[in-house]
Length: 196
Image (cartoon, rainbow, N blue to C red; front, side):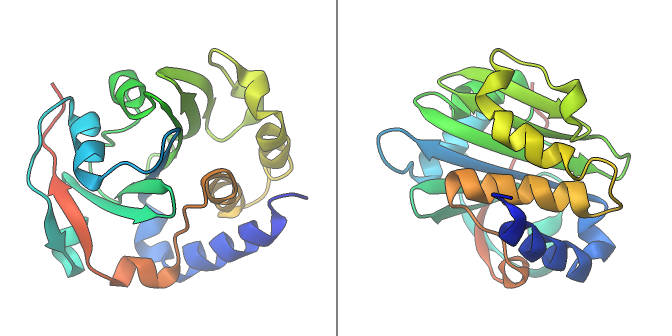
């Protein structure tokens, strides 16, 4: 299977960090058509034109309510949240982030609300609620046939199989990668208020 080697990596990461990653994660990779976006431009797209200041955060402060961590990795820009309101999965934010770009967004919460979203050029092409391919919707769900098949292979498997597979899909399609030590390093961050 195309994503299997990456899935094992993410199962290891999730099990090692299960105390808090089991409660929630929002991970987005933005892959622009014309080359990487600056972190400042990414934040501006995320919040709708404003440019809140980026600061270096680490330890507990990096994982507080409203904090959005950012990192460039290859041509992709990653947006990571581990606590609080998910600022990316709203259609306005996805539209701005995916302007002249491809976006893969994965999120889950302690309430078991989860989804994988693929957007491009301002449109949500496919959204997979509950990481269940039977529930797929969007403008062009056929655009992610291979990804749906991969998710279908683990849909009934115990935690963290579906989350690990979805993380493998994000990395496989964008080159963005989360490792165990990623969560231990300082990152540029911005505190984002509640979206209007």
